[in-house]
Length: 272
Image (cartoon, rainbow, N blue to C red; front, side):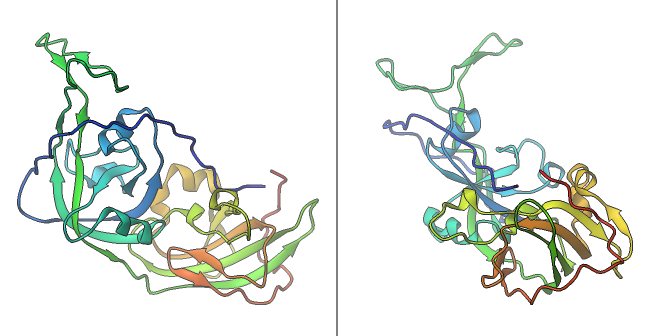
């Protein structure tokens, strides 16, 4: 079965005072993307974020100004007086628009007697000078608002014969103005942490009348920009509870009764 994979990240928190970051500009800029939460790690990315859990706005790198990408998926979100750090958790997995400022951060030079663990400094091959890891770079958020897509609806729920409980789910979205992460579609499992909840498996994009396959899961992975506009999707979902809603970037989605899979859908289930 396919479930959300949690990345195990470990880091040593720093108890030293760090200098405040410096903003690139006082003008507010606007970014749109999906908020994701990330845990501690001993990576430069996590060190820059402050040595604890942090939030990232997941967007295409080409949508960011040169030199502003601070995370693998996009840019680190920094709190402000108007948007406190704990507010970001309300938007995890959701498409949002953020207004704020890019912050350059600055090198962190530890005290001489410091025993803290931190990324090693490197030597600039051109200047020969020692360069310390940057801390505090990202996007300081002054306003964050969810982007409401017009609608997302389930067209059908189709039971599949397999060695474990599995259904095919067919759904549609309208006016999806930017790409979204299919793994953000899930269903709560009582007594289980979120990383153990189920997510879509073997995703396919169909044409608008649902008779032809436009892209399979590998093609979607290679071209995530396909997840935009008016979409018709099918995917398999293990251990679906028909009495519970799906959780998605659009909110909770009530499931209809299951029916037989239509003949027009030729996709065959493959065991994980």
